[in-house]
Image 1 (cartoon, helix red, strand yellow):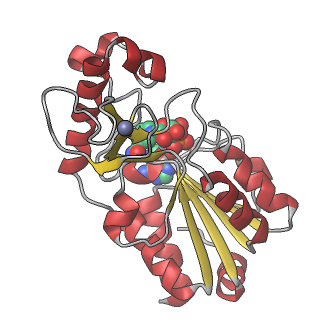
Image 2 (cartoon, rainbow, N blue to C red):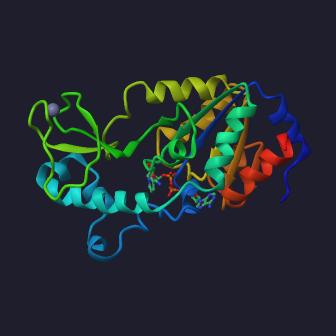
Length: 243
Ligand code: NAD
Ligand code: ZN
């Protein structure tokens, strides 16, 4: 793999590193992207028809069942070498911030701490009325009710048209602006506002490193664009820098 010695030097000297991950980092665990996941019974629906507050209001059971299916897939898989490499990176860099768009919880499962989960976590549920109750997901046939106010419980993820969890974006932007090196890993870079983080970092002078199977809109702007699987590239990078 072609990793420039310049990148290794920059990484070794970096005080602050931030990384943003997307669905691509979980691909090698066997989790497919939104659209690929729509098979069988679910192929007749578009994610936009299921992942919205309106869809849940109209048919809570349908949305609940879809998330139960997706959560079932998450429960069957394990973190991969890409997730573990980021756990290791945090041990070598003085200040490391991990930001993810994934809802699968695999970074936390791998051992990463203080992960900023911009889009929530599919392992949790919260009160649809917003009374503040958040719980661990439990498998039920009927949509469960909030123990505090009686409203439905819903997945604790960010749906289309919803704002991000309070403080999550602010912390992510802060980390992007303060870092020396910013990694964009396995993300197509089209979903806002996450996609803007790399530019926040670049505008403040950070070195931007992209790791993706293929070129994205960010590639031309990144100082280093490494094309390959994150499960191969990240461990190789760690080994070269600190191995
Ligand atoms: P995306 O599906 O738009 O893009 C995935 C990117 O990963 C692509 O650019 C692809 O080339 C790249 N990729 C695929 N396999 C890779 C690999 N092995 N190594 C490196 N790169 C690889 O994903 P996104 O940018 O995260 O945006 C999609 C939205 O869908 C997000 O908002 C996210 O919350 C949601 N989502 C989450 C999950 C999850 O939690 N695992 C899964 C699907 C969708
Ligand atoms: Zn409630």
